[in-house]
Image 1 (cartoon, rainbow, N blue to C red):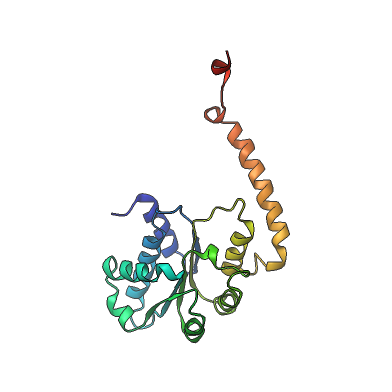
Image 2 (image 1 turned 135 degrees about the vertical axis):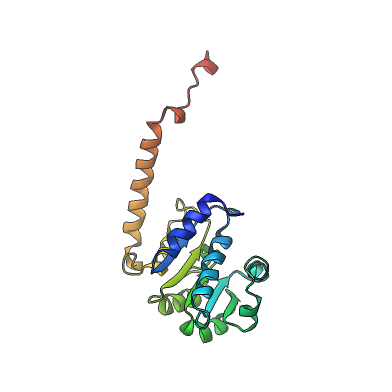
Length: 199
């Protein structure tokens, strides 16, 4: 069964003709399911032209295959290779296939950065800029992970988030964090009252 928030997210993405999104629910809240629904709809809408590449850490390749087969009945698409699942280490295979993909999904995208996977990051950056269907999945919070988050946003929208603007992005995040803390302090439920404990 889908949760209401999942239906809301999936509906929003599917109604958008440009489906370039960061799905960033917390761990265990169903990012894979949301991406699977969006992928399944793409397969249904374009049965002859839905080549999709899923890029994931090596430990999640079999999990993705199982989810797509059991929950979304996409076994035949995996067998005919119109849906391909690659690990971050499959650079050569990704390089051979990414330029013809109509959809790209990256799971655990916070692990895909320019320090640990520079060649793969650059390959995705170069080949996915004009892709209308591009999903990035990550549960990493922004705070204290600004660079990884910024690099994910750059992949989604390199014009709004050019790599040379990272310092500006850090400042914006810092300012927003301060604003969030000030707003939270206005809510009486967030005020810690220790008078009774101290007397």
